[in-house]
Length: 127
Image 1: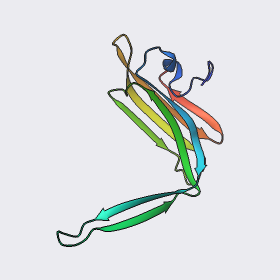
Image 2: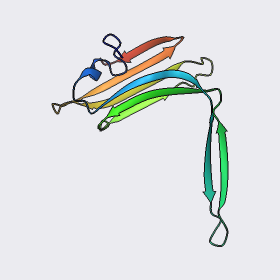
Image 3: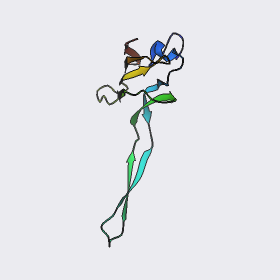
Image 4: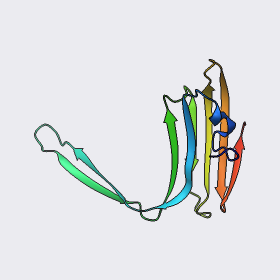
């Protein structure tokens, strides 16, 4: 985010006193590692509990990273993101719709979306 590249929130992000701000840090990147979780299953009053350990490899997966910070979230918001385009790896889409409250007690609808494709960012927004 800079003066001329305003990020996901556009000029609204510069409004003082907003309850939160949002930004996209990475539209698409490779991820490596694994996710391991344990699930305990009881088999009745007399039986012992069985623990099942499952590990899922995330190697060669796709990632997306955003930041959200402030004192609270809007009372109404939807944030949708995908980077699962099998024929176009590296492509990412996000869409956000929110009711944006202002420090003056007024609210307005906000919409922002962006498509990252072939190393080009194509933004869509109400601002």
